[in-house]
Length: 179
Image 1 (cartoon, rainbow, N blue to C red):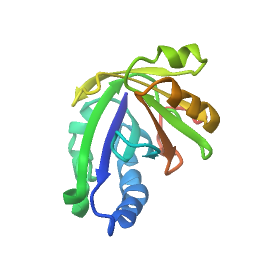
Image 2 (image 1 turned 135 degrees about the vertical axis):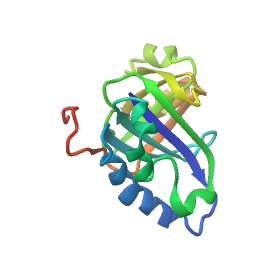
Image 3 (image 1 turned 90 degrees about the vertical axis):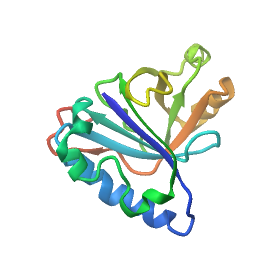
Image 4 (image 1 turned 60 degrees about the vertical axis):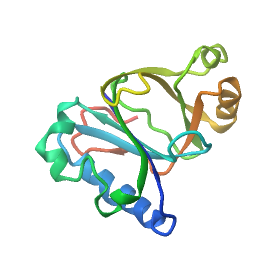
């Protein structure tokens, strides 16, 4: 399953420190939780959505309700929680694992009609929300080089483009194969 966390950060003074915490402390802590396999952070290139997106591969919803997840910081942002805005969490039934987005590539996320993107030859994977907010109920994601991503954005107003902030991190015991 794919677990997504989206949010914005309301205090520019602490935003860099918060990003460092999230990328260097929080993601590795989450990957140490049994049932977490991959994690990667992104920053939106446009407006109309939360600024930050984290995409994780997990075994299932029970991972997020377990004591180990809560003990290792899941579900909160420690001292930065009061600065978090536009926070959304969803679990999607979808791919076996989240796609890895390399430097120079972009993650494309579509929450509306993906047909124009498919007709343009853009490979997308469907995701169906099954837990937490369940909104949007359906999303499509894909990995594109930057020129293709800009074409995708022109084809649909419901497309968001995200640049990777971290490489995709993998659990030491990840059941999913490396690319």
